[in-house]
Length: 401
Image (cartoon, rainbow, N blue to C red; front, top):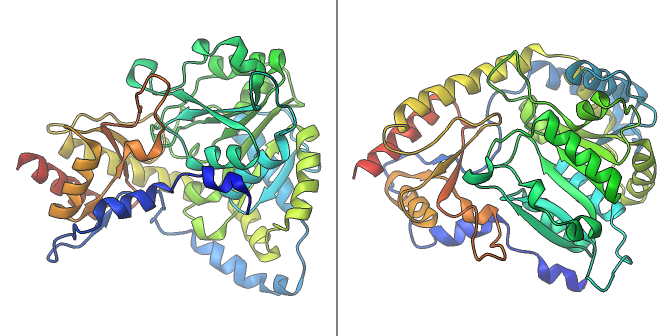
């Protein structure tokens, strides 16, 4: 077996199951899960209709490059959403089966594991706390993960100014997540421009995970994106920059496994070759349904309205007893706990049948001995309004006790 498999940490939900072992939830309460970021809002009805209409695609091998009509729809959406001058659907867009597998496989294609120096292995930089796929992808690509702490002192974003030149010089890939998982923090346009300048200077690739970009609270101020920053600099080739987007959160379609990678054609081209061998083409009927989804914004606006109402209701209930702030975007509350995050999550499950995720499971302990996730829990407001309100009432009841 690949010896690097032994470097992988257990997934956060494995740790959560171990935490709850021997601590069953009360039998009289319906369990409410705020731990997993799986959207529970209704999927757009027209998606199932589109899949059924194109079910004949089952008899066709899909191409890895994807159908031109889907790539054109994605390019059109990117252009409209981020105010881009041009996106070439033939060379700058690649459909993928959800961004989880794309984030992982892109790392395998990008990292040059032979570039080991006296200073050590090549580095893959990522925020801390983070989406665990970044770390696993780096380890299995033969690179070393390098964590950038995101704390209240840094505005829940990495302090890129604090990264030494010696670290940037070893960096082959920088992961950013904006809006962030789990913090909901959004990187601003000036910060993205700064990262592009650093990429120019040191030659690393920037991979921007923007899967939560369509869940925000002010319709007049959507989060900016990495390609948008490139365009603001007059760089329509998006050199060394790629973005990852998905229909899972935007359109409540996690089971469709539909997303895309877009950006630098010089990166997309070899990555397409990798994917051709990887064998991960999206089914034809899913491609055609996805084409319709990227062209519709009405259901996305309705989705945002539901999240806005849930955040407002839950905040009113919990604010008097639990320090929390509404995030810039996304559907997570990153809440500070009174005491240990593990103790809080265990007691909440054991006494109120509500599941949240301890923040330490989403982060790693740094060289300073600190884990920036400790003392926080991630609450995913993905369930229906009534369930989210009920969960908030139970959390307030636990804290009152």
